[in-house]
Length: 445
Ligand code: XLS
Ligand code: NI
Ligand code: NI
Image (cartoon, rainbow, N blue to C red; front, side, top):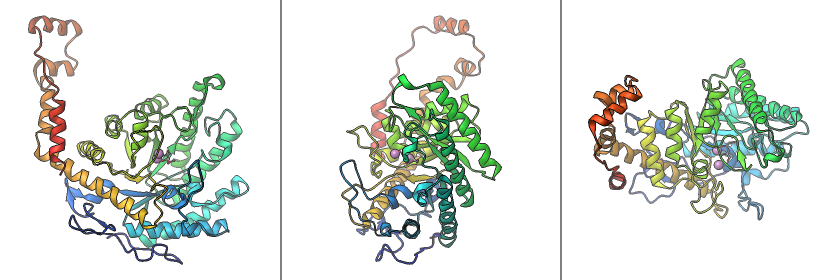
């Protein structure tokens, strides 16, 4: 393991040591059955396909609260009545968990790591203190920062948006937070910086100048980009699309919408997309679709790994255990050359009734195994089945002759029309969807 177990003043997960790969015959819930980090699959170690990251907010800040009551999970690192001490205990617990799991990365919002002060300045100073401590933890454990971000959606001041707020004063507060979070990301060597437009959208057009709000969003992103570059941030900026939650009309609806926005406002060189499975399904898309759209635009940045509940319409952020989703995702990733500097961040929470501390380990292990299994299956499909050949042959009429000329722009519309007369009625060709589906199932074993 390249990650070293790091325990703070108190051990929060006693009895759990570093999680090991034990293979398929193991019945140990605290062991990997498929994720064997150094095993070479499709030309590189498994861990490099995934670059797994732990989400600070769900795993260390959230005790399972829902609209009907406070969280019952009783996390032992959230006990201190002193906010700064609580943040330090949380940091200890976070690095103990991440290093015992052997995950190479983590992700955080400013407010996950440090408590609010009485003023924006005090809040920023709190974050600076915690970032110094986090830097030491990173060094001790070898765990790195996949991305940092600012939470400019929870505080009540952002009710009508952050950078799209109709009140300029609110926008300046968002700027203060984003500046601090970019500085923190740079100080911690973060490889990416994320913008999820939590409340960037609107509820009713009756009170909204939509064009103006979107121009403000673009201008804000430009200023954030330039500030980051000025202070030495060399990584990728990521926009995370999500439709219809929390606002009725979210501006960053899905990958295609974000790509259009980035191109329109000249941000395409610095920004890519962070795609989350549950956000894709809320937008009426599959995860694989969203990833393919981003990859086709050269804007595949990173992934938030989770899954939704197929029977309701909000963001349940469950741990991904759906093997189909994993296989379909890995098929796209393998064909598109992988995630590069992105990774797979577990933006997921255990269910409210999962009350044992070991459940957090089990949840992550289960998802890591699901994805590892998806990788092995997808690699097998691509190497050994007729899948790729079938897909290629479907488009073979464009590989040579007039089809190729068309692709090269060498046939005008009237020339194409003349060909129709010459060639006559085309033969009907089956899309073979059921055959494709049965091949995928045949290899899921
Ligand atoms: C919420 C988002 C959020 C982002 C980071 O739905 O997924 O957690 O990933 O702000
Ligand atoms: Ni997310
Ligand atoms: Ni989500």
